[in-house]
Length: 401
Image (cartoon, rainbow, N blue to C red; front, top):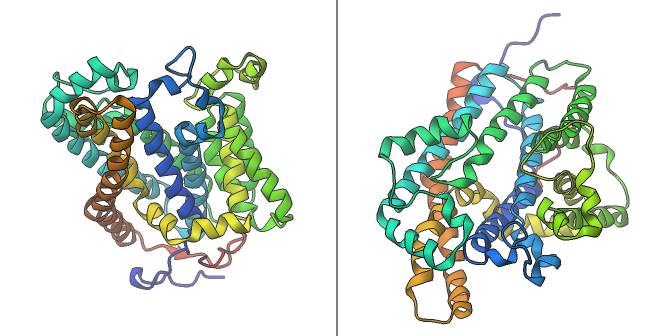
């Protein structure tokens, strides 16, 4: 039987968004900004920087400055969204991967240029903050030794995808993992009728767990949550327990476990094959459980669908990409230039920090992220008008929430 003709690009439907996960992405991005504020100005709170960290590191408040947990959530969400869109629209894998690269690289490059300008203006303030505050995190950026402008351009377009690191904007370490993890999921969805996809996703999840590449485990898990999302009709009590358990796992960073000898055995599970990653297996499993539970737990859904969480979801990528250069420069200068006592200074600094980063995240979203995303979407449809796949064997896309 002959396939029906492909619809024109203008008439192509778009897979409906899951607004609950949009809100979750926004909240996760906000937690990342809190964690970097603590890294910059309160390193004694963190087991990674202090041999005897503050008591607050042993409380649930630690979830607000454990940066690896929300990043793991990002990876799970990316796996889910890529599975959703790829199962509905048939584009070639190479085209999807190429568009994905530019979707990450264009905003990343804009953020390194923005960071270069701020470092050019505030390099002396950064040097002063390093000397006074003594935060190891502040030492991870260029100061007075700022390289030429084109180095910043190359860093955002090429280097972060090659080395997985950036001295202009340290959150860009995720770009390499985002790109590679996305390509893995695109590969499994490149054939619409691939009957063994679910098995391959399970094998990919197990394999990445065994070699301790937990960032990629999160991608496979996100795609599996998409594939099995209609089979999660358990009671609200079960989902509530899973949600609370996921928050507990979210505290289990490697430094946290090393700081607690009674829990240190968890650092050795799994140990089937030697490997390394930027996240612990427990944080990754916590992120997977949180994404799954948040989609089913009624009160969490209501919070994530509320207007503040949806606004955060809209600006999440811009917020993620712009807050670190502000911390290194403008806020580092403010932290060492006031005559207030240190504790009062940090309170004032934080109260200024939140609205400034939200504003900058919104501006970046409107000026860089949304225009580039729209242009790439049009480019993809112009290069290859996709076939809509309404009879895909995967469960139907849920209605917009």
